[in-house]
Structures are given as C-alpha cells and as structure tokens.
Amino acid sequence: MKIYLTDRCISTTIRRVSPKDQDARNGPQLYNRIAVLRAERGLSRQELADAVGVNYQTVGYLERGDYNPSLELAFRISEFFKLPVEVIFSREPFRPLSEEVYGRRDDALKKER
Image 1: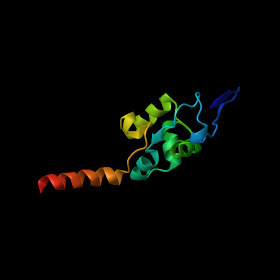
Image 2: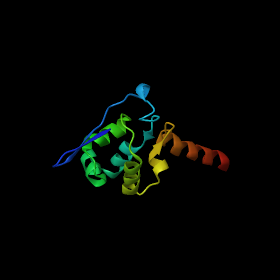
Image 3: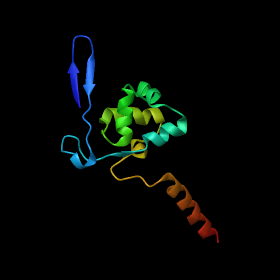
C-alpha cells in the first residue's frame, strides 16, 4: 500500500496481490470472516467501510484476500464487530461455520446416546 500526501488530501493505493505472489512486505495470506459478519448484520460494504474509515473497495479487497489489513485496521474492524481479532482473522483457513456448528451438535448427540 502506498500513501500519497498532497496539500488537500491523502490518497491510498492498494496493490492487488494473489496468494501465490505474497512477498515479505505483504506477509502471509490472512483469512477472514468479514463477509460472513457483514451478511449476518445486514451491512453493505459501504456501511462497514464508513464505520471503520476506509474506502468500500478496501472492504472488498479484504474479503477476497487480495489485501491484508494493517494491524490498526484489523483492530478497528474487531472493535466494530465487538469480536476478538482472532475470531475475524486467521493464518489458517476457517472451517465452514455449518461444519463447526453441526459437528459440535453431532458430537453432543453421540455422547447422549
């Protein structure tokens, strides 16, 4: 990400990076649940972007994994959703929520029988 300062505004350029092209500067691929959390709360990308102070396109880049958030942005997103950072972001792919929920239910039913 490059930040350009001018006398009137600050503009940000985000370089799109595929997971294959991750380098030391961008770090490893981070996985996130931003899209799921937005959908659960009925939020648009624009609404989330406004709440955390970024462009709506940045939210799309984050959701697709094209861009890793800065630590500050990760904390802002975490605070907005009132969830710990590690619930939203992970270095490993998340298991599908249905698998986690139903897997636990199946385990509980087996124990009862």
